[in-house]
Length: 133
Image (cartoon, rainbow, N blue to C red; front, top):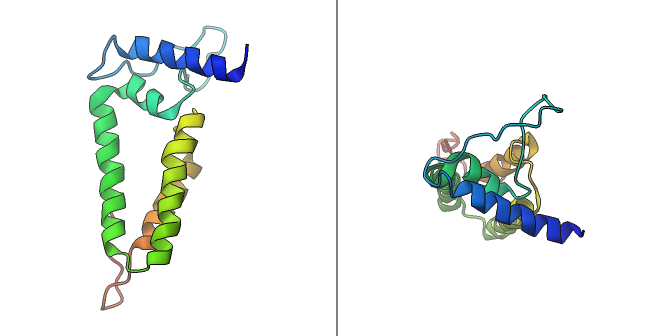
């Protein structure tokens, strides 16, 4: 009856459901008929939620988009202290936060992520900012 046991059971259920359609995913799972409002979230873990809904192709596309933005920002930064700070934030965001949260669609996650990307983008010689996206 602990939250950890419930999380492990949920992970097992998610993997079982993901196996039905591993490449393209299962889409958003139907809600209970009692609660007919908003999006349903079956997974208690964000990485599994992405995979469960969009499959291996969706996870790959998501990782490519995120890593491409991170790589571009990283290459354009010259401040090693800022790099260290942002790297720590990214590690926490994509490991701890994504492993312990089921709120993938939350806007604040993405505002913080893209703010960190933008912080790393340096100003060009003419004063124009480098394009991150």
